[in-house]
Image (cartoon, rainbow, N blue to C red; front, side, top):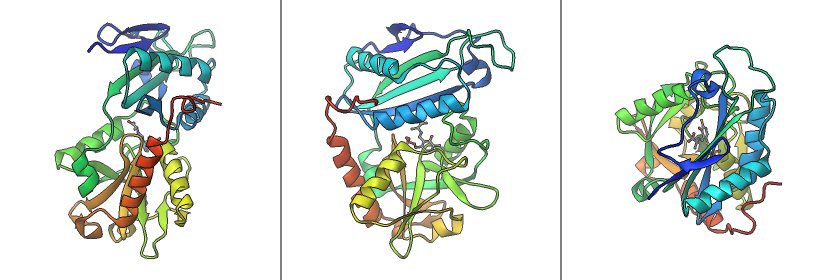
Length: 293
Ligand code: PDD
């Protein structure tokens, strides 16, 4: 089936869509992005993704960022054109195209806006049921990981390092020995006291939209959540470990390097939250899920 993409004002087939070689996203990774889940044709947590996208664009000082209403209209058209049921919507906004020069090109240059879709979403049934393995890697990223920038080379390298040993994800550890997150997801542990712990928001981790959603679901279910930094040793000796993210949902971790977590099986809390998150996905409807404020 032909896939359609949106590029700078035009809907085109994905095959023919192109951007300028002087686009600053291409030259400098001078761009930001969002990955938004589509579930039964409904965007999931669209408002949160729009808030984060606007924040990212403000943090990198785009002078003329597109409005969220304009982005929503494009996204709706792309979902319609591609007959999207379940999959992802990818939104990338770059500073624009201009002759290569490090300083900003000036306010007269418009951002470039690209949107694409992909069918299919979420971990496999086996990953969901058995849990996944992680590989410990040094966190090589810059100091503003809260900005969802397209400069993802460290994420790519660590994800590949994990894949090369058959692990699902890389568990990223700062030089100070504290764990930050995974290369494409946030990480959580459940301590011996049953309290859920995840790293506080700040420049060292991405403020995951799924992280926020799962935190709310956990609290609604009467669970205690603590935002605190933790070490690799604490993760390895945790009662349970799990990941959250747009493409991972809530995913139990059963192994980290050679250490089994929860005796090598998905933990009870992770499974409960995984199921609650699926219920949350199924609760969306087309009337309300496109609300962007
Ligand atoms: N990544 N941390 C990092 C480094 C991420 O790249 C992501 C998401 C997350 C989870 O954030 P959210 O819950 O908002 O998806 C955490 C997306 C899926 C990606 O780059 O493909």
